[in-house]
Image 1 (cartoon, rainbow, N blue to C red):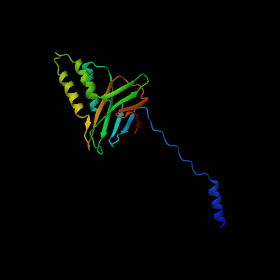
Image 2: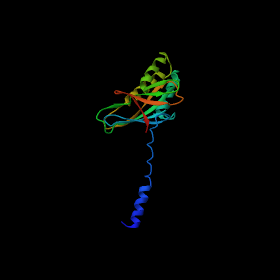
Image 3: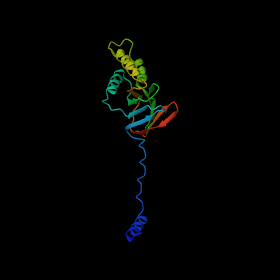
Image 4: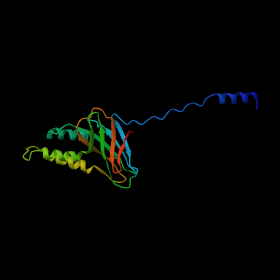
Length: 179
């Protein structure tokens, strides 16, 4: 071994290996897009909370205000079922807030509850608007194998701070992380 090789060997032995950066922990709180991957490969992304100008949220809010229902929280669920073998629906989502845990489910289920707030003799087209919105949202909830689409989840209440987000799946509650 030459003197240069000996020197190089001593230098490399004396220099510590560069430290690897610790893994970045997943973000499991706060507003953002959370992801869930199903066993068959379907990917569901939940925007928590949904943007107030999202077309479905605008339509839901217009009907909610018209029927006099209490304020709601909305989440948009985008489902990519391109590799899935079966139809997929967005599971209920639980948002833990400082004050409570809200359980959000497909919005058409909540809109159906609003139907009872419309007076039978209401002279406006409100009953028809509620019915139409419910049917439209219900029709978009199930995403066929090989397809993609979106739906809205909702619950009465207000979220001031998203402390945790969980999906209520057939296998139990699963903590979600931001995508």
